[in-house]
Image (cartoon, rainbow, N blue to C red):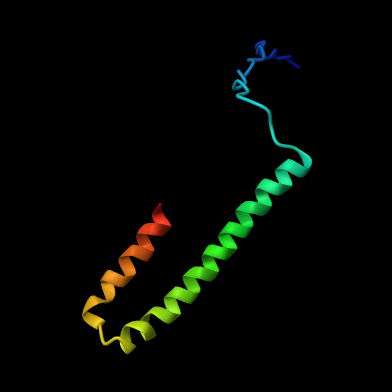
Length: 80
């Protein structure tokens, strides 16, 4: 029975990225995440209201030819 030897493999140390500042923990992290979730929920609600009400508003003003002008500013303020 022949024995085979494995070549010696040295462990390579993986460099860690430098830390750039303090990390949020505990209550501060919960506050930030809560603010983000609240912002997303309010934005979704606002978009739902505008998306359903805008066709009715445009129809009552008889301005279907200007519908895109009413939609564009609401899209632009979302991007900003």
